[in-house]
Image 1 (tube, one colour):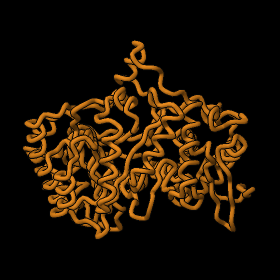
Image 2 (cartoon, rainbow, N blue to C red):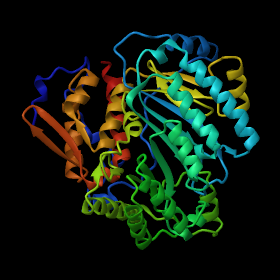
Image 3 (cartoon, rainbow, N blue to C red):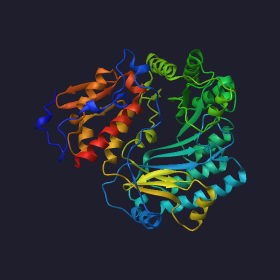
Image 4 (cartoon, helix red, strand yellow):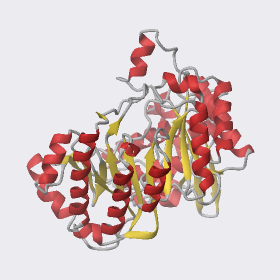
Amino acid sequence: MINVDRLTLPANMPVILDTSVFDSDILGESTPDPLRFGFRRKLSAHAGGSHHAPIAAEQIQPLAQRVLQQTTPPFNKRCLYVHIPFCRVRCTYCSFFEYASSQRLIDDYFAALMAELKFKASQPWTQAAPFQAVYIGGGTPTDLTAAQIKQLGTMIRRYFPLATDCELTLEGRINRFNDEMFDSALEGGFNRFSFGVQSFDTQVRRQAKRLDDREVVLKRISELAATDQAPIVIDLLYGLPYQSIDVWLHDLDDFLDSGAHGVDLYQLIEMGNTPMGKMVEQGRLPEPADTITKASMFEIGVDYMAKHHLRRLSVNHWARDNRERSCYNSLAKTTAEVLPLGAGAGGNVGGYGFMQHRKLERYMDDVSQQHFPLAMMVESSSHAVINTTIKAGFDRGVLVAKELDKQAGWPLFSYCLPLFERWQKNGFVTLEQHGNHRYLNLTLAGQFWSVTLAQALIQVVTTAISKGQP
């Protein structure tokens, strides 16, 4: 045990964390099976808790302009996120559906997006340092035409300073992603493709309103991967209605057989206000998998990837070879800055969070006037970087004491040792020390509950800081 009495803590901060005041929402349960019963259920897909202070509406435009005038090094790593808010079909599990695809509406939106792209690219901050990753998300970016996809990539490469190894990811569906679309994307400079397969099983796909049956999806993924032009990555969801353990094993086999270069394994989070939720209530769909079953599916997935010697990049992501790096997904969970483009896009620059208008009319009107199309702007809390370090560490599966303490400016890892020791006793983590280097490693159970644990630690640290007034 580290002698925390000799460490320097913030003024008024207790020497060490008192865990007696916490319940099982923070500590988890003491159970022989923490993977399945460690917490009641996963409540969110991502950890939050940065406690941002909103900026008054009249201050947003001048403040955004001032932030994007900054050119003073050193610079954080930086990413570009572009949002395409259209889908031809709403998946039953999706709570983010925004606009049904209409070619006229897409064309009008794309014209505004190109104008915003040039406007944002002209800002001094944008040109001051290279971007390491670009991600085109949605919605369904592949609902753009082949010509628009090529133009989007070309414009990004022309107007933005990109690192020589910059990862440009195009997200989308396999449906209608033909050779013309693929070739146009490659010509535009995209060098990574992410497809939301979710499940290969035809019955599961149809009930989730996914387009195309298993054979079509598997064949197309295999064809794209076989070109060896760029990493082809897929998302798989576990816990969907009709997705039994046997179906899940077939999904994993199909991924491996497809030749795709990488895969994300995500558990279904039953968020409110989704078509799936209503269909289950009405008896039109069976209940999705419970937490116990999803924990078993996660265990099967982790074991499967290990057996087949895939390289693990995070608690949820694996790569078949070194071509798949998943740069954006990794950087976006760190202190990297993200410049947003498009309606509904979010990001952060210079210690401020940006959220752009979701309504197309507001977005396009602001862009036409060369205003920043911001619905909201917030100032990050003084300890937001601590929260980010926690989230990034738990996403990687290991929290490094020196990294956490450096961002906190005080020995936060030692302060939290009583909590970590309880987590270790409950089977979520293991504590390691090698010389003066200390690590909090997530067990299999901890990996499954990584978002829950990160959220709990953020809550504990935020409360401690607010009381200790460092």
